[in-house]
Image (cartoon, rainbow, N blue to C red; front, top):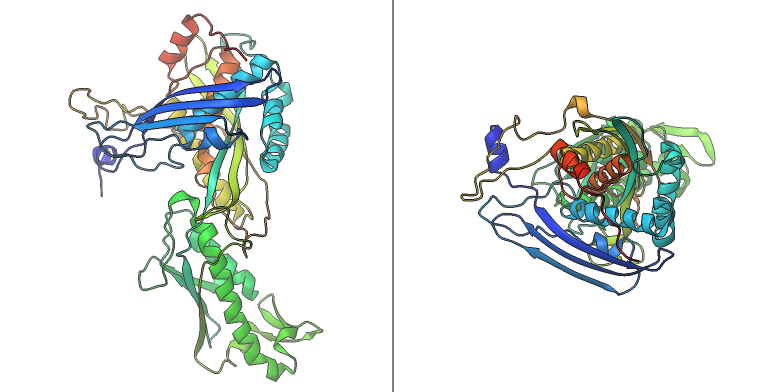
Length: 470
């Protein structure tokens, strides 16, 4: 058990970065080139890069130059905090894309429709903008009164990572009980429920009929939980193992039902003859006809249909878009996120409630990073000066906005479940969307996080920045 101070100083930190990002574009907004230089520190460890998001989300020609540097400092090592590097990369990229849209005189979403080749994100922009009311967006800084309101949007991208060393065993006992076993662990993201759902669907049962046993190295090897890869890695072998166990059961009961095993199906807790629905056995009755006390099947993750996009990565990218509405008090500098609409994809949603919860978590973490979280380090000795929850502010219940989630389903038919993770991409775009909304409210951009009252007031006191050349 760690106390509050140990939580801050003993388990790693989110790396920071200083980025110089330049975009070349034609007068119609078409991108021609991009250059990124970033310096980041993860203390005594590596991993402060800002990812590939600037290189891959929009640019479709080879005119990209990127340099990312790790600077070692006398501080604790970096640790993953939902999509390592990507929120930092999106914070710079998505603000610059908005600046480009303003420079060429088009709506920020219209420019993305032009330069973003992802059909999935195009649909997310459409449904998200409609739900959010993007068409009512006003010019930057035009909101009246002391407390100004603004809206902004930003996109995310994350790889569809797959761990091929992912396997599980499904067992069916003569008493009708079903188990699935894998050494995969559940970090609170709901993989227990997902595994139960996949097996139950294949066998015509309810998820509560399936016992899930995980987190033990005595079970078949399971994937790790980094990179949002767990669901996409473990659900295909779970379904295949359940299918093979089911085929063994159908073979065992077919003679007594007087039909071929291929003419039987699992429906609503029963085994039913396809040609005669009145000819059926309950799942428990059928299990009693097994020739042994149990049957089982162990399966390992196989290649996606058609191979992989690249080794360890499934086809395409996952991502989404966040729409954010903020209020900014120009006398105190206080920023409040009032409303968020997020449109996201993760292939086939298996447990929509858990998916919404994960996206909610990514949004809340992103807001907390954008507005509040700030680690103060002693420059001489590397000690953290605010290792507590009094001076290290995180988002609390009073700062939680109204959140509306839209799941956009995508069936690529590349695996037997088409399911992917959502955890990382749910966080990536949030801080950038908040920054774009703050600019829309006050007409002045803030390029540094967190967006504190002090920084807002300092930005308002400076002359407005001039946009670069196109």
